[in-house]
Length: 359
Ligand code: IPM
Ligand code: MG
Image (tube, rainbow, N blue to C red):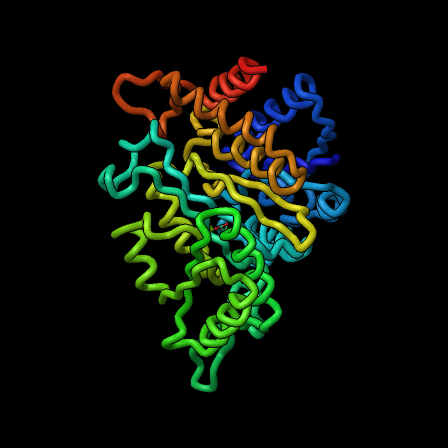
């Protein structure tokens, strides 16, 4: 199996080095047979080739079975034209590879319960899966742009558009996931205002007929944002549009205390996937050995589970992360009184040691 390694920008480089250590350990000690090849994306791609998704990288990811991505973006590239900004590299990967299904788990590690800004009883045991549509909706809808009106002022416009088949495939995906969990699916829309999500709701109801064991509910997005901070444990799986999912997943991530802990998967129809931490490139701490590599390491676990169908190895990584937290080891974003603060590289080493501890 072939894994494309795209560290990207900022802390992406440091955290990816730790994920690579984990994959190397699986290769050497647990007979995983993964080949890794590096590529440039984001600002790094722009600097080297004038484009955030260079042709070389595109060929590499098309050939690979899975892609590990660090993070893209940074101050340095903020003033570039929107067409070549680092974020376009990420959006290009999603659309070129048709990675329409984005899985964003929000799980609270019991060892980190104090890190949440919400009361422990509100979040303890939290385990939500957000399924975000990733290649459609307002992010990609046409027409889009900024035009000049007759009266001389500018007008910006984007289009929120979904076809039934796009809604159906993300819906089926979410129902399949719900079947493997607590069998409760909440579809989030704005059907009281937007026709496109009125149709979204109708399609979800249609799909639900094939999943009689899953309890489907619907919620308007504003209410969903409120419920996520009021009583988040009411949710099992949530499914929603590209932009609503972008916003709600940040909110859900923060319930767990640190965005530095959460992995994600972006999958196509055949299980090929791109795996990345939910957090960004954090240019303010880049290169300082401070970033938390655990979200990226946990993304390796998701890759093993969803693309390589290897739940045992995935669990080995997840258990190793739990063990490292039990040992009191913490990067700066999740540290608290009485814990041992360590750096990015030391955290990666600790996870590898814990993976080896139970053979
Ligand atoms: C995310 C990010 C991206 C998005 C940006 C960087 C384009 O916020 O993955 O959630 O909006 O999808
Ligand atoms: Mg986002």
